[in-house]
Image 1 (cartoon, rainbow, N blue to C red):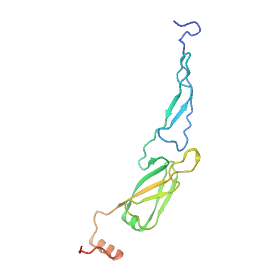
Image 2: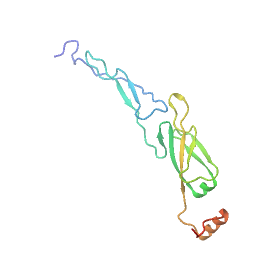
Image 3: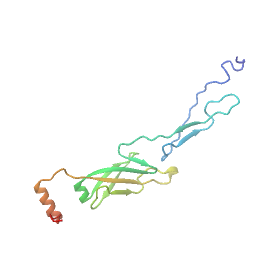
Image 4: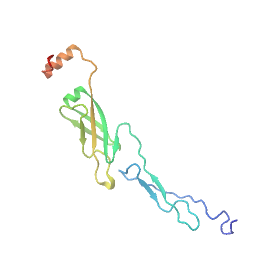
Length: 159
């Protein structure tokens, strides 16, 4: 039975407000701990309340540590002649990547400083773009002749 000083039991429910400060660049699985705010019992120390950072999936970018990875499909004409592409970063800012010259299929380009923010404001990781060249399914005879004329050479029938 409870005494006069504790009519509702030895413990009471209490509501508290907590503010979680999530810093840019925090890693998935990283804990945020509020010490001594969890349930307590008479004669025992209050426990800690832990929140664990989870990461939402993005349809374009993949994160690994401080670096971001993206695969970009480009048409054959861009792979041969170069191109500019505007990206929208995870934080919403836009930036342009310029590619000059020929880009091979599965070529990986490193864009310095366009990855995730590093912890404690120490710069940014890198963005790695893998290019997937989209070849046409077919060419007309005129297109074939035009490409051979422009590029010259080609394979011979002999081995």
